[in-house]
Image 1 (cartoon, rainbow, N blue to C red):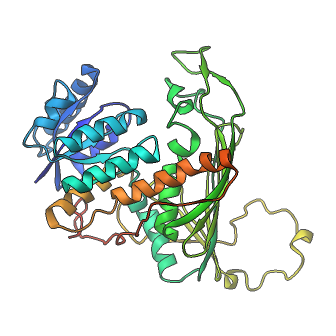
Image 2 (image 1 turned 120 degrees about the vertical axis):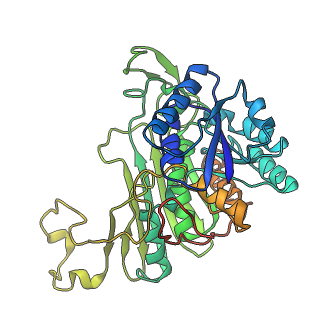
Image 3 (image 1 turned 45 degrees about the vertical axis):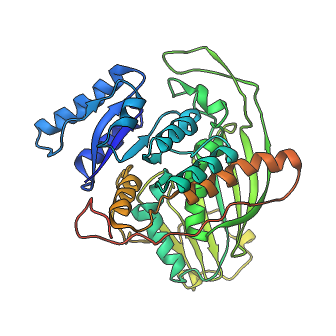
Length: 396
């Protein structure tokens, strides 16, 4: 049995705890740690309540600090779900202590930090990888199968966007969204970019433009209503990514725009168009449009047709073909545990995280330099998911 220690017991830890206790059978939670001891105690109390309901898991220990967790000989993997700016430091210390690491996104704040972590993991023969693992869910895996099977023909390109007006209206502590490693691409981009490289393959290069529309933000959520936040990064980011297979993806992410529908993800092929579900989720819907779907439609200038309320009305929904359509955060961790035990590659691997990190950081660098930037990192898509009859157990 592979055992993990959770470092960081903040808001995102709840779903990890739930899935480690109730869903995934091949990785066990050994202990928890947080700078605020009450957070760690709350995490252990949750596990205790599930044990009382019948969960067959041990009660986790509470570590005094992360160093104690790193020294625990019974811990195999460090689950690093601390704030983004802490990822590099904590992951590095864990690797130096001889532990495998599964980290929340992003891998690090800069490409240089990410490259250092990957090199260190390779030198020590350790697994390193991490979130997002939503690409392993039923929705995006169904899309991958449709693309790999040629249902939409050769991929021409994609169009993805994440549009909102920031998080200060609802998040209790929105500061980090406007600090280093917290801009729209670094915070939400991992979901979209990870999905893109899993559907289209590795990127060859990109060109980007970005700007900072507001120098400060005013918090309108409790408990810090009225406080002002200094904006330290660009919050309107757009660009085009060229993939090695020749496809071109348009990417647009912002915290500056009033908009109702947040996720938008379409993939275009020579035989049809695929609408990919929100990459921040594990399920669907998956929508497909091919010419024969509208074979008897009017053959007239589209500009002369009456307005369409639903642009996807001619699309058909494709049934999901894989498991894990609910919120399955921790799926990538379970996959890593299975990889450690079986000797196969982990799907949410360090090469993927590093390639995604380079793509994300390249938008700002390209905007500053005014140049098309070639990617330095290389990434090879790992095997798609396989359906296992037992939910919570991964394939060999």
